[in-house]
Length: 226
Image (cartoon, rainbow, N blue to C red; front, top):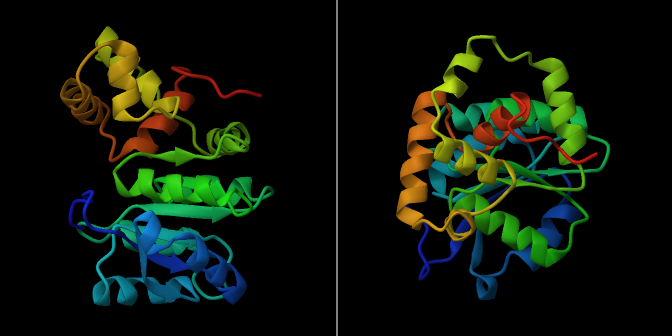
């Protein structure tokens, strides 16, 4: 995946088995908003080939599909070198599926009936390396995630290795703040924020921001709103 910059549109692959949904996404993710849909897939089984033919910056993924569902397709993508991040499209009652997608490596999730401008922001955030967790269902999804995954006791030792500043940055990540928002609130530079995030990932053996957010909730560093 090539770095996203301000001059090039964000390249998107859409994976959804409903043409109506794909048509709606085509109307929302437009070039005038800095987006370009480079490929569409009607099933998760098609996404790896689509990515090989059409390099992309983010994959927008449905969860329920007939042959290969969104969880399995996300797992396939995350196994590839330099794979783009995955933003999951979900409905209000798919908490277990969304938590499975997070375990598979999804960078975030958003409700299908979210406003168009919110979807654009979510795609842009994920493409730029941030996570996006829809606040309407985050608490429930993470509760479902925790019920299926018990954090190993040894991770408590790893948390103790974080400095006070690193814990502050991790809390910011888990609150959904961008690097610039963390920098502004902690009165440090964005470069310093990035350095802290790199050390957090290394100390906790985390692959991305979504994993860091889940880790923070799992270990009581932050708590979801109920």
